[in-house]
Length: 348
Image (cartoon, rainbow, N blue to C red):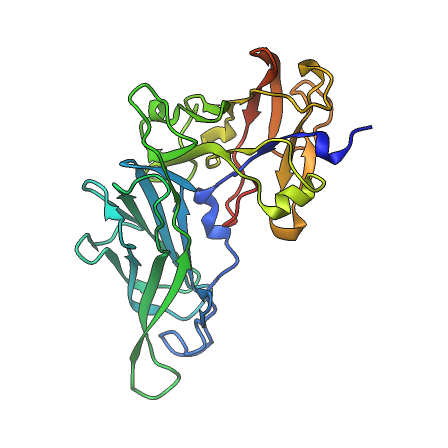
């Protein structure tokens, strides 16, 4: 029998930005008329959120001078009303700039402006979803604070009256990525790193914090959903209070994490997690367990990751390909990791 404070922890942040269309914040139009009713979308100020606008920012860590990706979605779920003169926009926070041209794309393809960081979708029929993708970058140093990204959608609506059409705008905010140290030309970064790229060779890099490492092999495929680039992040960080509680009060090591989307063909990536010192309560590196933390907040729980050859595995997305000794006192796990649908959170 194991005790909670004896575990080595692997935190996995799994992003599926391509699945953002399944997000719960959807637009409901009232029946009647050719434009959206005044009840089409509701705005909340704290936190800033609208039920018709979803914004996703990836990866969760962005290395200095690398490219990240923001997606702003507007959805009209009513099957009759049409939103007219629809414009979707993104407010880039201070310290964040557009990446090299073309920085903006959309689905469906419509005219977009890099000057206003917006796309003009015109009329959006009931039941339709439109998306603007924005590639961005930053020269900020690792650890620099970055304000939230704010996505918005504006459209005309008749408000149920007999001729007066007004334009409404609704906004949703999303946290900016953590800024990580630069990834060198040889693929070595700092404690945390990440980028979004269409060149899969760039998805391979090493992160290191005090000898605890997370090393990502080149992703075998790009993201599902025809994203402009494939986001990936990895690194080592301190455990949160909720994670520590899930460990039984304290975690024996820092948290290692990896973050990438659902890949085309549901292919899996190879990740190496190195812990330079096994917990003192573990008798040998061969007997070192590995646990994945699932959920967020007070609902954070843990499951033990099993071998890829085991008949059952409590982990929904990770299995152990191999286990090896690392240095005089450490252990190295070679893992097979799959992406998971995006829900706006990651499980560290």
